[in-house]
Amino acid sequence: MTGPAIRAVLLDVEGTTSAISHVRDVLFPYARERIDGWLRSGRPGVAELAAAVAAASGRPAAEAGDVLRDWTDRDVKAAPLKELQGMIWQAGFAAGELTAHVYDDVPPALRAWTGAGLAVHVYSSGSVAAQRAWFGHTQAGDLAPFLSRHFDIPAAGPKRDTASYLRIARALALRPAELVFLSDAREELDAARAAGLRTVGVSRPEDGSPDTGDHRAVTRFDRLDLLPGEVSHAV
Image (cartoon, rainbow, N blue to C red):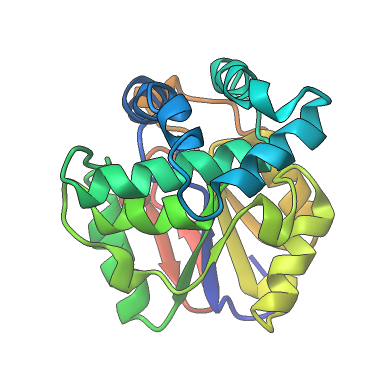
């Protein structure tokens, strides 16, 4: 792979570092059950989120709970939903009621990449708060020290938009080709490549071996040789 030396890694979460089933079967129901309680709680920022739900859905703020549950069930990547989910999950992690999942090949890879001088960043549709809580409370321990920057939809834009990856590169003061993006979603990989990023598809059998198109693909992080300046995968 030719071009400028790679200086940083940009990671998707669901299906890439972590099992889709854990998010869908554990975290989503946990937050869904607590939506009404949080909307009534008077916690800082919740009223503003309810107003944002009303503005986005065209329904009264009093019906925000119904809208949020519908969005949850359809996995709508709506910023107000992701923000509230992140707040609820953060509280759940802090209370010891939740533990995040990462695949067993992820912690060694994070240590190796950062030890080799690469910065590792996260880009997920989940809120920045949710990302920080997630990686701070995994079954493998606190992985937050290995992660430099976090990006979500409000910060960077939708993950299938090419412009989002250009914003991230600018925020990191990097040329796009100095970033390598890892994801299980072909549309995201296509958008990142169109922006000039290097791309690696992650097609985990545990998550149904998703089709990552014509992007270089691996099934595990330990099948990827990733060092500053180069990307290759093991045979």
